[in-house]
Image (cartoon, rainbow, N blue to C red; front, side):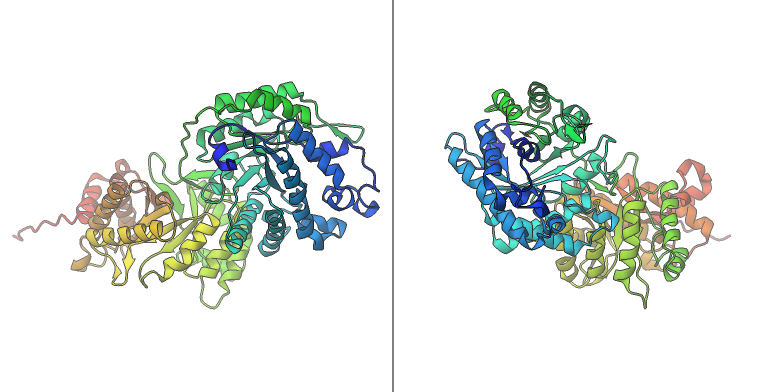
Length: 606
């Protein structure tokens, strides 16, 4: 009998329809729910009246659904606490999977296997708004998922996601469960986009995809709930054009209308069939089904139209990106570079350090917003300061930046607990700054597993046990070593790596640093030629450290120009202090170029 993933590659798969709608159609009363205190808790029906849920499963299986969902949307301790049932989360989750599995087995045949998807809802808490902390939500998801896995679920469906940070927490819980149980089952992630065009927290579909795409355990990505298929169509088109993962779509039977205090859904089975047939046959959606308001008749028509057919083959084009909780930002733009704002760094900005000491977090947010207005695409955030608690400071800053800053964050710290805490608080996709080989693999051993766990990209510095590399050859040798270790040993992808070839200042006057600029530029060229999917980064102002402000302005601008020509993708720089070459006096520009390329001319003194 073929597995879910095998069939996913062969044909359109069809989920069941709405659990709540079809339970409500049975006109259950408080006694059916086990008493007034549990009235409305669908998950407790598994104890008080399992036959009600069994009927829902059987009706959808008779309609021909390939996959039925467990009665566990709210079986986490977070939700069950509303009924004082939090201590029964594992039990109810396991019961939901066992019942669904029993029903699926009764209908499963070698020609048409039936599968059980463990329904994992968003809970009632939004971690991005501080409703709940990472640890508590992680523990709740882990317990729920453990029951669903032990009950025999064939796959996890993390669905109706409203806060992308909640989704990422659920994924880390799934990672830990799979590791502990030495067992992996497929995972679907399905976000909910409101009629406003974004998720509840304001997340665009592109930001959601960017945040989830790096997670290896996610097999399918898509949308469910909130609206009907018509309102989903543009976002579904976006996913079909951009998602490297198979696409899932489970809409409501239209947008609900409140009639007499009850939600009524008006999209007919025929209309749902028409829309989802279009999504699969014309756009390439791999899995379809019904959410709120959909009945066995909706699913029967989907099966009639799509069973044993294949979706359109998609030619997706995913651009490696990072993201804030709101929007994605590609790691390469034309023309380059991606500007990384450098002033939210306590080591580089006197003002930011003073605000940190004063714990003036509102002004720190204002500094971040100023850099966005000045043209930054990503913010470098460092709160390291001697004598302060860096973990606590990072918590305070990132909690605010996560929802108040519209561009992605680069976490800049040498301390592993600080990096992990920041990653636990960021809803989007971050960059971690940085790894190197100064102490051999020690830093990579700590940082890269965190990047894998939370889906982050990483900056890699060309430093090894001998120190910061000076020549292009040495910079490249270190980059290749980091590249090979990161991919082959730690499971990173080439497109997750951002190499900073570093530079010494040309302002020291020391002979050994005369070629610092050209060596750095040529190292970029070598790395990009050898590893075309990696990105490159420079802290541009290091090249002119120690010189007067006007000279720095000119040299930084000219240096950046030639670094971009060599393949530079990203620059940590104050965008306001970079000029295009045509705005620089021709003589100054040529002198800067000669300095950077070490084109010294010895003229005879008369």
